[in-house]
Length: 179
Image (tube, rainbow, N blue to C red; front, side):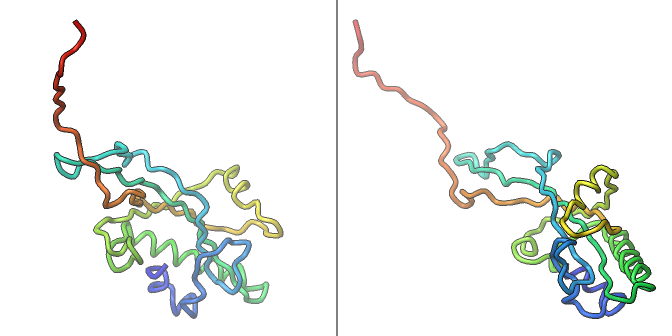
């Protein structure tokens, strides 16, 4: 979101707080809503559920997901210029996304910003059927939007930092047995 604010403010959006996370149907005062509508496991980056950091221990691997966002423009202009304003905003978003293939470092916030991982940005085209299902918001009509996939995002397992000792050998000692 910080990245979009950098390129969209002050033109075509006047203030950074007018870009935010929200459903297109519940956008409030936003001019640009960013809506997380799907989280899916990233099959390409799928790892074994356990991995070794050193030969003596193992730990759970991070879960790898792709995040799908719907970016929608909202204008409060007069009816005669509203659609034009929304198209200008979406056009600028397309320019920014076309210029940016990956996000990393200080552009990201929280633990994503601290990691060394790069997140790919891929615009996608949804089928009419998928759009119809997605825009099934009460009291909200369809609006032109941009579908963006962001990933892979690595989510640490619950047991992060708590590795398990690996069994390296097994010795059985016999103390007598059945004769």
